[in-house]
Image (cartoon, rainbow, N blue to C red; front, side, top):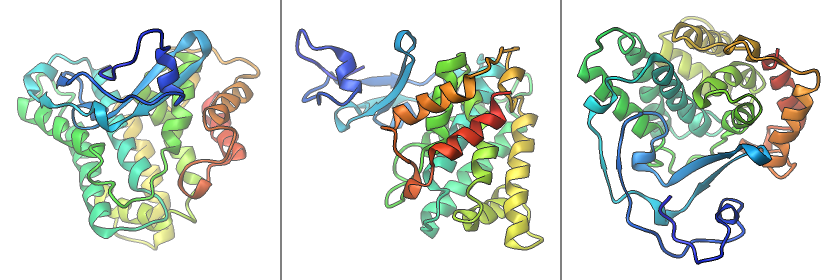
Length: 285
């Protein structure tokens, strides 16, 4: 991490927003795993398993001064990391733009990135996949979270906030946790976010027939189908045979809400404790 701290300062206090950095070491990156967009943004997430916390941090001082994006360095990635990276990028698009607010230019650009990720997924798992397809994944993942497309947007991040705590609980890969959460999460917001879901059905999955209500369902159903097609699972118990405890839903719900200050969160503060619990009830099986 590039942020410079004074001696005798606990680094964790920075992540908990108790202190603010005033200077940073100039940082450059060499991309090896397309997913988080760290090569083009100023954010990070750190897990501290000893206290069951996974928290994010961002600050203008820690933007990279340069980044080297060479797809040759991604050619040896295993499928597990590729599918997690692809779905992390997809969720960055969903969490950042798929709300009840519409800004046509931004929204259309995000849907183009989503469509690109779906198209890439048809080729990237072939052995050997071309360097061109790996380069396309780098570009798509970078644009998904470079903070340019989200200018002016009222974002959500609800899927990420729930997925983070599945990683805390079970050690599930980040992208895999998001894949589990997304379908049931989106079904809770068909009324308030339905317009853009219907447009996603059209632009991302070529579904133009039917009413907007039918397209909303088709978008979520096709997203769920695609999640499975690229090799993710939808239940915790299906992820490398994880064991689920009797009180895991309540424990994970508590972790999510504590990470958000025990208040509703997301776009318009729509994500309540009840919704978090219901989503986790469908995932922690």
